[in-house]
Length: 109
Image 1 (cartoon, helix red, strand yellow):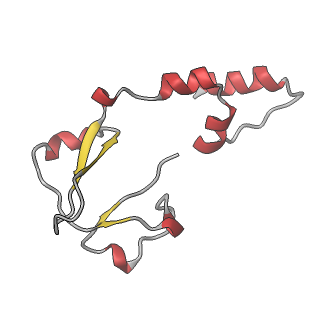
Image 2 (cartoon, helix red, strand yellow):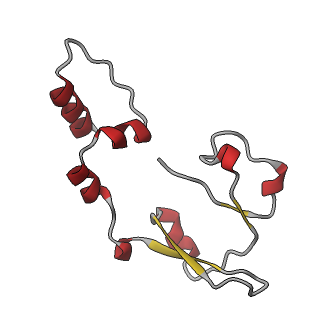
């Protein structure tokens, strides 16, 4: 966002700037107060409940950013084994065959 670029340039005072920041680099450059402002309130997030079908573990609830298309699926139940591939944590590479029929959990940022 333009405000982020402005903040970076003001802090570093370069002679010339070429900006290409991914979320991780940008997050590290922001100060703590700006980070706190970016953390969404739990009420603004969508709860996702993960339940062990064997009943061995209690239900785990994750809170995720809402998406426009979520309204289309409101009240629907999505079921399947959860797959998190540490080697492709951000989903940047094609998903493996192991992802077929599973709910894939990805990292952001």
